[in-house]
Length: 137
Image (cartoon, rainbow, N blue to C red; front, side, top):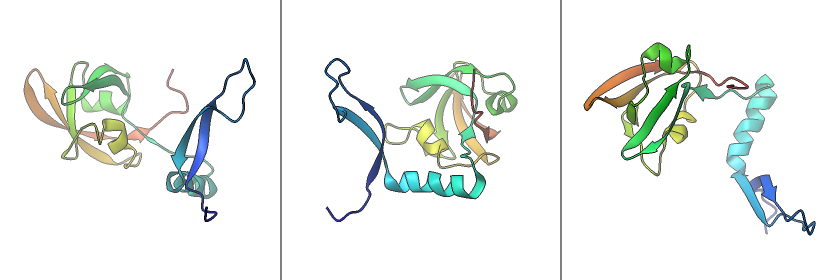
């Protein structure tokens, strides 16, 4: 109402059969998140994101590692399938702050400490984050 941008649509779904528009379901990002991306694009010409090099899924108490990409930062640090990541730099993973949420607050090249449960034993593993590749296939 005040002419302020509060969000930017990034995806939408409409009924292609009826050609309805605008989208019946739309997803948006907050304008301050978009602003940070725009600033980075202007300054460097690209957007860099941190990368561990794992795939997995949320699990009770954290993030379960299903696969470690060979040669990725997680591989170099010694993470293994079935590890349960329960904290990043001492901040517990939760529904409020999942692993991806905490990683997006970091920069490529930054070293973080993952608290990992492996075979029932908790341990700290230092990982130097890489830069997310343009494609991971």
